[in-house]
Every structure is written in C-alpha cells, then in structure tokens.
Length: 257
Image (cartoon, rainbow, N blue to C red):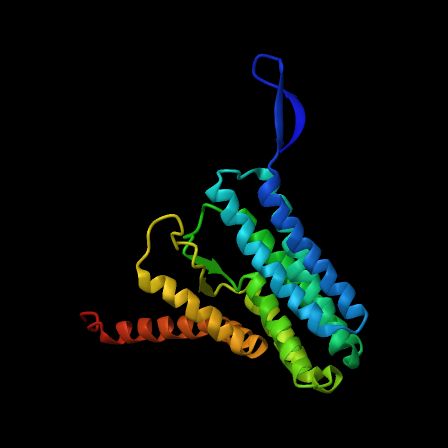
C-alpha cells in the first residue's frame, strides 16, 4: 500500500493509501487492453484479440481479490472503471475498426464510435446504480461480455484466414448490436452471487476442470460461442417474460359489467 499523509480526527497526520494487490491486477488488465490497440495497429489481430480476453480475466480477478482480502477502496473502484473503458470500450472498438470497419469509411468509424460511447454510458450507469439494483443481474450487456463478442469474432475469423475487410457488413452489425445491448434495459445474469469462500461439492471442481478442457479444444470458437449465447440470453429471457405476462393477462377473467 502506498502512503499519503492526511490528518485524522485529532489533527495528527494519518496514513491513508492505495492497496497494491488488487490494483496490480487492474493495471495488468489496462496493459492488456492498451497492448490490444498497439497489436491491431501493427496488423497483429490474433494477439490483439487474446489480449482483450486476458484483460477480461484480470478484470474478473481484481474485484474478487479486493473482496477476499478486504482491500476495497474508492480509488480501486474508479481505477477499475477507467481501466475497463480502455480494455472493453476503446480497445475492441479500435481493433474491429482497424481489422474490418475501416473498409466502410465513415459508416465504419461511426459504428466503432457507437460501441465505444455505449461502453462509456454502460459503465457510468453501472457506477451510479451500485447498491440500488439486484446484484444477481446486470442491466444491459456488461462491457467485458460485449468485448468478448468483438474479440471472439476477430480471433475466429483470423484463425480461419478470413480477411476482415471482406466481412465489414457482418462486423458492422455485430459491433452496433453489442453497443445497443450494453445501453439497453435488458437484464443479464451477473453470476456475482457465486460464493468462492465456502466449501463446494466435489462435482463442482470436476465441472471447472471440464470447462477448461472444453475451452482448450478450440479457444476461439468456444469463447465466441459462449459470449454469443450469453449475449442472446438477455433478449431471449426478456421475450419469454413478455410472453408469460401476456399469457397471464389473457388468463384473467373479464371485468364485471
């Protein structure tokens, strides 16, 4: 923890600082996001996509490390949010623009801007609603999941030797769709209610092992498939709830005359 001298309630200087451990992971995620931009500028799209996924892992670790070690701080929350904007807002937008959307000219960079602006709005809304909403759900697609859609598409297409410029229309629709889902009112499962501190059944450990094996079979395709399913889960659940409500309304008896 780095120290800053601030007066305490008695007027004497008191040590207040920044917790180093969780912010190391946040910095690692920020570095990965920045590296993704640099790699894309040099035409190295597979490392760029991989770097975004690494940033995702770091983003998932830093908050849990802070909670497990009781090292949460306002500084850490703000730093994490700014790092997320770079890693999951600017990096995916610039990577997909350089890889594909630049072929569309002005429409292409506008699509990339829509994604980046949506990520900023999504993060701002999330920060202002902490503690006011059910932590089991996200309102709108989380920015790391949206970044996973973009990075997964780039990684899979690059793995198959496809030219991004030839897929500009597909990249346009996926980029804009990811941006719209981020600022939508559709709810997604957050998985934040998972308890990592208590004991779990043995089968849970086996399931985690199988997940790693499954991903290792073909990381690009599996990761893209996972994030596509997660991205679709929100609209599908919302439509199911609407259909269920309509069915309940129709089942109600008519009002008396």
